[in-house]
Image (cartoon, rainbow over all chains, first blue to last red; front, side):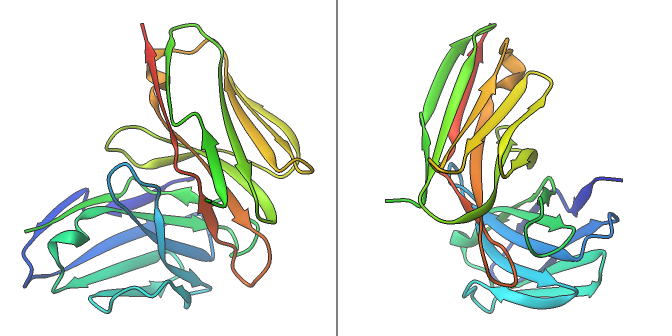
Length: 113
Length: 111
């Protein structure tokens, strides 16, 4: 199994809603990543989890809250988002945090209304 | 100046043509990714390489560490190759490597 899965594929939410994005991998990878990608731009790193611990937070606003309940699962909790947060949210994983190929999921297309 | 530069930004080719996309970087890296993204879609990792050359089907990637340059070649291009191709440098050092992304090359292969 060389797949990273993400749910949901599409999400529309209002600015007062609370929602969560889910990412899962069963490759035994110990590093997992959240990226945000705006249209026609490269992905921007948001968070990195290394061995289930948050190792990098790229100064992301607190309305985005990551969680890594176990080594296979990564969540991104969303609360009080702004319309400018609308983007494709990509999850990735790698075997280890250093020097390893990253495998990307298909992404969640988020629209904030 | 971006740490990872790609050229060209846009490329239109006829089916069957040989295609080259270039990537130059100015930082120390441990490896370089070539990624593919179809419109509206997720990202697929094509190659990760730290030296020499890799081949997978019609795709070939090369890297010259001394010159800090990598190329992605597509032989016998096909309309299904139409996508954005992104090179991303895996930064060197630290407990966690970060990917530094180029701005992408939008490839359109016409039948």
